[in-house]
Every structure is written in C-alpha cells, then in structure tokens.
Length: 242
Ligand SMILES: [Fe+2]
Ligand SMILES: [Fe+2]
Image 1 (cartoon, rainbow, N blue to C red):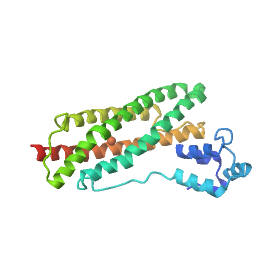
Image 2 (image 1 turned 90 degrees about the horizontal axis):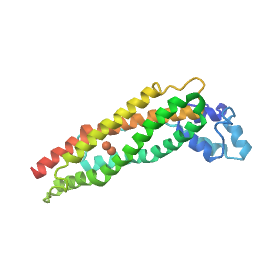
Image 3 (image 1 turned 30 degrees about the vertical axis):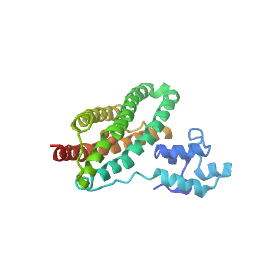
C-alpha cells in the first residue's frame, strides 16, 4: 500500500498503466514530474487531492481473482462470465497498452530500442489475433453454445449449426489459444520476466506491470475456455444432436 502523503507521481504511475491514465487525465506529466509529490502536483493545479487519490487507489488495486463453479454453472452463465470478466477487460486494455507501447518505442528508442521493438512486434501480433479471436467467439461460437444451453433447459428440438458441429470452431479457438500462449511466453522472455532495468522510468514499469497482469488474465481466460467451456459445449451438443 502506498503511503499517499509521501508518494510521488512516479510512485503511483509505476504501479500500473491505469494509474498513468489517471495522472495524465489531470494534466500531470509523469515523466517531467516523476519525483514531485502527488499532493504538490495537485496543489499546483488546484486539483482536489482527495478525489485524485481515491481514483489512484482504485486504479492501483490489483485485479481480484475470481473463482466460480465453472464445471456446474449453466453454459449461458459461463459465457456471460467470460465476456464480462475477460473479453471486456481485453477490449479496454489491449488498445491502451498498444498506444503506450507505440509511444515508448519513440521515447525510449536509444537505450532500450532493441527490446522495445521486439516487444512491440510480438504485442501487436497478439493484439490483432486476440481482437479477431474475441469477435469469433462472441459472434459465432458463444451464441451457438448459449442456444444449446437453452435447448437443453426447455427441451425444444434444435438443429445443427451452419458449420456442422461446434467442434469445428472450438478446434480453431484452441489453435488460437496456443498461438496466444506462445506470444505471452515470447513477451516474458523478451522482458526477462517483466523485471524492468534499474534505470527504468515509471512508464516503463507501469507497462511491464500491466503486461504481466494481462498475461495472468489471459492464461486464466484460456484455462476456463479450454478446460470447462469447450468440453462442456461439445458434450452438450452430443447429448442434443447425437
Ligand atoms: Fe474468450
Ligand atoms: Fe478464447
């Protein structure tokens, strides 16, 4: 927990990328003012310190782990959980991190140019793949799974989906999960386990912390789909359609 009174702008912004966003929103330059106390930075701008601090506290809080009975809740509840917890998070975080990495490549080019350009390349590939992946799940796969779930509950007869069997898109999603897992491993290797150099600025630290958070979230997201959603959906299809 940061001691708020004695914390500098840099202390806050190194926590994660969401804190950088808060600080920037108030027109505070996290580079130029990294060593300035947050209350001083607020005072200079006539900002309400309490309001800024409470936003920073909220932004700095780590994402709480969520556990659920993924083997037994309905498949509609499970797709709803995946959308709300993981897809919405990625839709918000992926473009924000991309924007930050784009800017870092120009600001830190001299010292960390090689690391940043490799990180940037892997990240951009992952982002593009994931955005398409989420779209396919939400537009093609999840609606069919939800339809199966409703049919099982109501007992109404149901036909096969246009792509024959749910196992087809599931195979594709599994391959894409493997690709995303590889990209995460590459980013972890490039950043040496997300440990920033001693001289790294708050922005750098924040991006590493946010990438590590993204990794944890994505691995959990993939685990819930691979281990629960997909096998349960294939099983239900078999029970409904034979
Ligand atoms: Fe997903
Ligand atoms: Fe997925």
